[in-house]
Image (tube, rainbow, N blue to C red; front, side, top):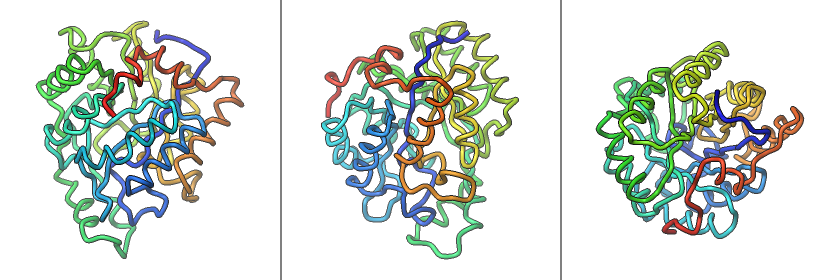
Length: 312
């Protein structure tokens, strides 16, 4: 069984690379917007901020460390939240591009996808008639040919460069049950040191479906593979965000919300900000009788190196 605590870590994924600017005026695009929304999410109760960068001119995902550095120092100076930088970036990026910003920033934590997969966004395009930017439509429609590359060699490279090289810990993103076995294999090879932090992801086309029995199955598989040597969190994509986060809380897990994962605050009601989603899940967590973990709590629970050892 996983480690148990009454404190729930809230992760907020602030912008991501899935949604495009046309989909929501609330989606932060510029460094200022990303910083402002990240800080507000931390103030609302997020202990971890999961961050991507976007080209401030048109909102497309960018791996450029110079863009990351326009918001990372500001966030660090304004709140104590753990800053978690993506190594997933975008499925259009090479592994080298995805690593560019983390290797400069040397963060406490990075996301790490635990397997290659189809990663399809193209059904989203059918709902939009008028686009803000020329790149958006093809970005979505072409995703029927996307393979999100995360080979064992890629995973080992990321671990050695960031884990061994920078003391960075990982949010292990598991989009299907096979990804849990991939992680167990890597641990057997000595690549990651327990306790590991799992992010169980449901509802992405190409990954495991958003059925509650799948959550139970993934959790039972994690228990079998990792025993007490892991902590876990849940991400439900789209309209499944709050139901899956609520269920995970009741099962002793942690939660992830944010505009990267869902643009809504309730069925049919667009979210106005990341902080709105954080505030909602915080209310649910506390009404269920749990406490939210502070950034200091999260650092202890996850064995992080501390904000004083990052390079921003």
